[in-house]
Length: 299
Image (cartoon, rainbow, N blue to C red; front, side, top):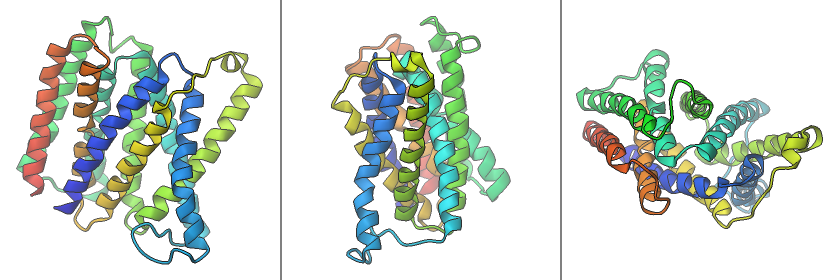
């Protein structure tokens, strides 16, 4: 199905996004990198808003339709949820190996699944259930791998931030399913990014005014920073387009999308030379097996 294909494309792009995020955050200010991420993403979509509202762009895949204030308020709420998730995730990934962070993020679809079953009444077939179960198993195996690096999942504060990012991300995914029932993908993505940039800008100003510790943090420009925005923008475009497809299941889309961990793991192993790759590779194989089951269940 087209929605499943779009979800797989989004997953591959998200893996590259995670890698560039990890590189950008090394010895760098979290707030500065996150603000620039929202700024560059807004710059990508702002021209389409302007062209659509001036009548230059009147139709097509990139057209941004007008909408009432109610719809804009819904997107402002989404910006708050996502920004909170990002702040937690950026703090966590700065202090933990990407081969630990990415698989924890990959458990987010389990929470989305529960919400999809309870809220939207989605039903999974046998293959899809098999894919979900393998993801749960891989998480427990991952916690064992993390302890070998001195990372205790129960007492490490950075793990808490990553888990909070996953929880808020699950809330965001379920909210996306609600939004895409009535709103057009390009409208959601373009305006949501604009509101997110405004919120993030406000946070940066306040933190720099009242937090001497934040002002003292060093910012280093890296060309990987705009790459975060580029890969995220295209990944989210595929994601929202997938959800807008008839018959799309948020539980399955979310699970496939978190398959980005496989790409991030490859970058972490080949370019960042992270540790204990052999034991983590077993977790990756389980995730791949789960994605294969999801693919079979979505054909």
